[in-house]
Image 1 (spheres, rainbow, N blue to C red):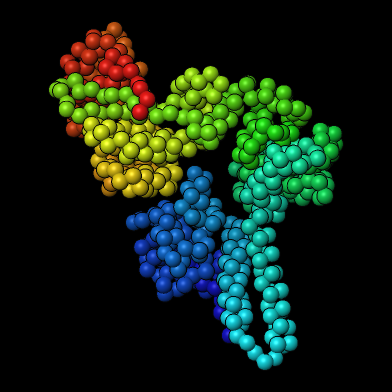
Image 2: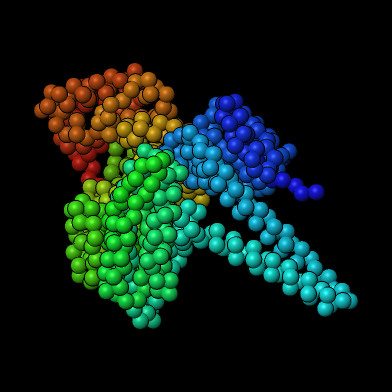
Length: 594
């Protein structure tokens, strides 16, 4: 008797459960329901689901935490999870905690069924492959008299296994919506080409083409995700028809971006492809709900040269060329040589992005520190704040964060800097016992992108355990604005670090528009007043008043205060008068290498 797969639907709203059940009734599957994350975890053993539809916002533990716990369970860590959410911001978080896909609210029947069937097929293939592998291993161990019959059966089963493996490889390398290669497959292909260029075995200069659909967001937001997916599918068919299958590698890079690698023919092949694409786009129209949309694209191309050492670097270069071209109103551009590309690099943040990547790969960053001094009494041990510097590879000079942090945030690599700083700070503390024993507190800044990462707090806890350091000596500084803009993420981050004894500081306090109610609900431990108010408070009455107000607020919250940018005795006197406990700045201590 055929067994139908079980789908577990998790939502704390009965109406949502009813609607999803009705949608799933048309599929060949059994339905189990849970009205909370806790109940879903209880049902895992009993129902043995092949797929979980998981609502994000629920009472008790939310969908993200539920998914995280499912992934920790050895027996169910591979069960596909599809998040159901009405917020676009939830999508990236869902993937970070282990989600396989998402469904947007309000739900569309066709979207739900298509995504569910895709995940069920993939899960079933994995399950069948494991069973076939187990059976093959067992049969190979058994000797039988009828070798001819055994070999015949084995060949049949091996062929079945090979089909399953080929199917799984296809699913792993292709985009579900467009059926083109996905980003992982593109990464593998470009990395292979780079390897050939670096080893001088490549006879041709490949070109990386980036195509951005200008109207995608309009259609996706106004007509819905199903319309957006259909548009991407139609454009993928169009581009695939124009590409040369013997020469070109077509992939979906991200939401509304496609990439094509043209391995032969140089800039002439790119120009020919661009002409064909522009003509095809001019003749193309997208029809949805009896409404017709005309499309335009931004197309840029650049050679993959000897100076490029990674897929991420190639994508970042192409993305910056596309960004600057669109900003200048140019929607078709071909960079034909490395000199032109180098010129592009120096026009904006791009060069900094590449220097940051080089800095991380070549260990060009340095950890410095600045002492924080008590304004009330002499302290036997010192507090320090960790500061990061980047070494200029050509001159050896130090580059300060103001020059490169904005670019790091622009390209989404600031979290890599955070991880580097935390790892190397703890490593130096573990190696230098005298320094470790002499400090009472080590403060480290954490960026907004790091706070949002689901596993970043766990990374810090792992580093503490690895270097066997007491978390009570570490203070992690989060900007006030970021803390309130990402309240849920920040509370989780703070809570996990508090469990390891770490303290939390609200940095740059006073630059945002804090809600007192929110501040009372955040488990932070101290306040750092932004230096823009401190450095001239002895001359600027408005800034003095701001500092006075912040100190009074801190005393109401029973939180100590640190003042940054203390540069002279007059400022120290003013801070002491207001009752500020700690001061930090060049007046006390100029930063030095750790």
